[in-house]
Amino acid sequence: MPEDVSESAGRRMLITGAAGGVGTFLRTGLAALGWQLRCLDLRMPDDPGGAEWIVGDISDAATLDAAMAGIDVVIHLAAIPIEDHFDAILHANIDGTYRVFDAAARAGVPRFLFASSNHAVGYYERSSLGNGRIPADARTRPDTFYGVSKVFGEAIGSFYHDRHGLQVACVRIGACYAEPKTRRMLDTWFSPGDAVRLFHTLATTPDLGYEIVYGVSANRTAWGNLDSARRLGYEPQDDSSAFADRFANQPIDPDDPEVRYLGGDFTTATPGPR
Ligand SMILES: NC(=O)c1ccc[n+]([C@@H]2O[C@H](COP(=O)([O-])OP(=O)(O)OC[C@H]3O[C@@H](n4cnc5c(N)ncnc54)[C@H](O)[C@@H]3O)[C@@H](O)[C@H]2O)c1
Image 1: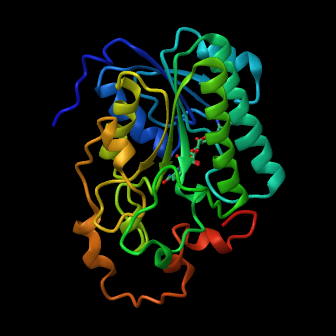
Image 2 (image 1 turned 60 degrees about the vertical axis):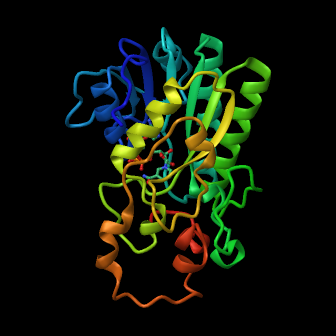
């Protein structure tokens, strides 16, 4: 079903981290759905599109105040997207996320969509799930300092919802790439088209309170339960099965962290560049 653009036409959205991989998919797709975009990043991308750009750091209060003015919806993506030393995660993902939430609340922005991650629940083992999928309200089991930072983002989102009435959705993104790159990504793949569909749905669905949803496509073997996302109106249109043949000849070792845990090799990742 085509997205309803009537809810987005002319409305203003801020995307932090907009020059990155997920940001590039989202700003391209959401602009096509009528959103007026303001993009904030440490750098300009090669293809800035028609959006308004602010080059700056989410740790800078004046930059954030300017970025929030007149905004209807924030999508907060800016972060270190992999494991790193705790001090680096603390600065970019924990302190930075607090500052973006706080600036949004001070500016009276009504709605905030936070890029969480499957690594907030990465220590769940497939064998513990049977044929089930992890509900969005299950206990968090972060697999890295990075995963811990995403649990923090979900928690501070809950606090800003309860204390300040901010409408918040936390999206536990799986693997948002043009195509699955590994066998594990057959489970976690979040197609760019479905990413645009889900974030547009969360930006426009009426009566959003506080929600945690999984950001994955309709993969046959997905780990995350899509009930909360579907309840809000998300209808994924892609699934990873078209790519399954690429990985069919790879042996499956149940003790391999890539197979055993939702978080894959993040469960053994050490801080620093991977
Ligand atoms: N790519 C995925 O599949 C995936 C999966 C789970 C979660 N996520 C989350 O989605 C978000 C985007 O991920 P990505 O893969 O696009 O990462 P990315 O590294 O491609 O993009 C992140 C962007 O944030 C910017 N940034 C970092 N620190 C900043 C700061 N202090 N101020 C301003 N901008 C800053 C970077 O310049 C970069 O352009 C991250 O929060 C990540 O944790 C991504």
